[in-house]
Amino acid sequence: FYVGGEWIKTSASHVFQGQMYMERLSPVGGLSKPYPTIFLHGGAQTGTRMQCPTLSHRQTLVAELELAEENIEHDFLCF
Image 1: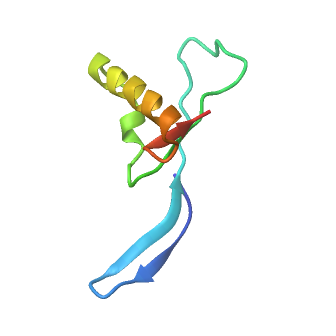
Image 2: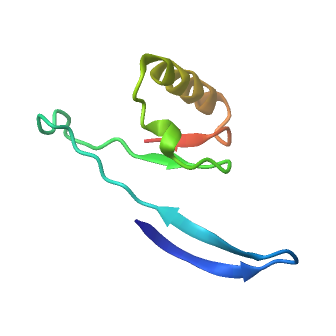
């Protein structure tokens, strides 16, 4: 679901901005860690890149996390 946001009139159309997409995913077998992993996307990403369905996507995520450690504005933050 989306939280917040507002419609802005531009010269060409109307744009919805300032919203945040929220999604909760839980492991099928139950929790295995005491604290959750939280991803905050940025850089015009949709957040779907963080749902790593294949090994190649997992490798991409790891590479982006390594870049994020060097440059916090890269793509997203991981806590």
